Length: 259
Ligand code: ADP
Image (tube, rainbow, N blue to C red; front, side, top):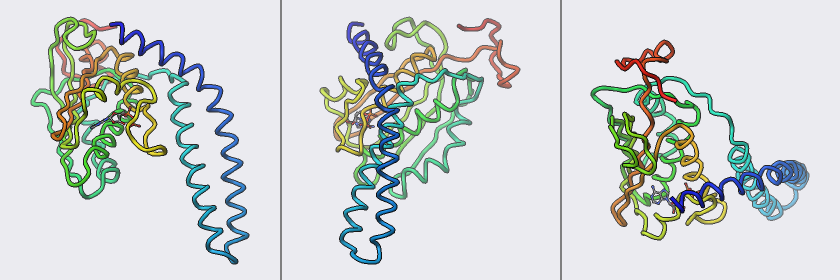
């Protein structure tokens, strides 16, 4: 619980700090990229070498811009717009995007529940979370590998996973056959800015953002990882009750809603 409190305090501080910086920094980078682009056009006819240096600068600036966009999204704490949905259908709807993102060397397997439960979450954020987990899985698989996304049902006791409230959850497992994590890494993955990836590649904001989203949605997140074998990240999202079923076409028999 103390580690979780530290995590939340750290996220708040990061949010306040980055909000202002990210906005200004992004404007400055737009100037850098624009200027380099003009210079490149003028020099192109003369020296290929100059062009290469400018290309490098542009790539760096573009990476920085991508980082600030993520920082902004992180700091903004966008209000969640939850709706009823079938998570398995959402995952299946992402297969094209997933194939494009992961490339040929990674096989994607999707496993559906026999009795699909509905959830009540922000659709865009859930897609974002799953895509982020898929990219992490890809990065952990150096050569070939299999990414498996399994959607199922889980009934949890209070505090069974993190601070879970007793009740029904949909469980989404994102598994890879990659490098896995050491105990040291595993203990720090939810910290904002914690990354083991090279500068420009990792921001260390993926899992902390997912942690925030899942908690705000009344859910929980758990990670199981074995070095050299792979990693499974499990999202537990509260089952959507019949109260909202008119939006969701839900088949949940319960009459009571959840907060
Ligand atoms: P980033 O991906 O930008 O580094 P994340 O917060 O998503 O930020 O992840 C933090 C770190 O957790 C990664 O740098 C990596 O060391 C580790 N990690 C995350 N997902 C996996 C995975 N599927 N397999 C192995 N390590 C992982």
